[in-house]
Length: 236
Image 1 (cartoon, rainbow, N blue to C red):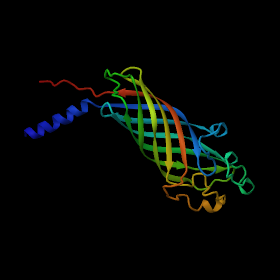
Image 2: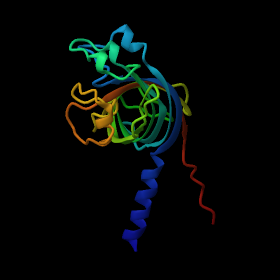
Image 3: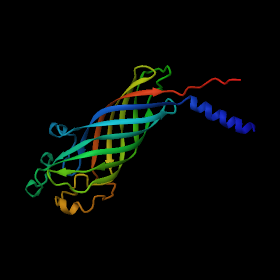
Image 4: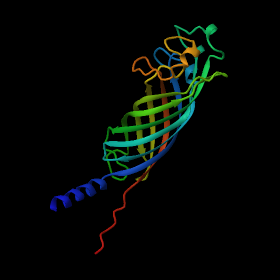
């Protein structure tokens, strides 16, 4: 009996250290794949293809070091074959226009590792912290080249990146985050290894692989609101 009481007291004590939060944010998506890529860093022309996105999350901060959250991203991505550096795709054999756009929906489970001791409802040395973030998610896209719409693409995504959090008060925080999302398919833009036969590629929308895959980058700014468990006093 004493062991059972101790077990429930331990669970109750650990829950006191947790806080829950939800967030809403805005950002932008930048595609990198066979249709649109760059050598070392994106140029101004590629940066101009960034399309907007929205995100929302719900999570728990288990201690000053780790956060866990489920996050939904909804937006658009775009790729332009005419912006590809050498070796360029032959646009004469490409579908016109050589630009695809796609809606983007991704549901991810993410974990944050805070560099500094950081908790919104406690006094800490720093009111901000950089952090690493990583996780896994499921991705949906449906690319369109002009009037051509191949089959939708569903893929596993591996998001990873860095961010900065800053707390305004014990309930409100701000988050700036940069995520790279590596997909497990090379068919998001329906071009693989510079093959521009989109009709053939449309027959294989999965193309599961781990190397030389498409990816996209997401920059976002979010407002986080924290909530805390209310412990009611015992009544006798």
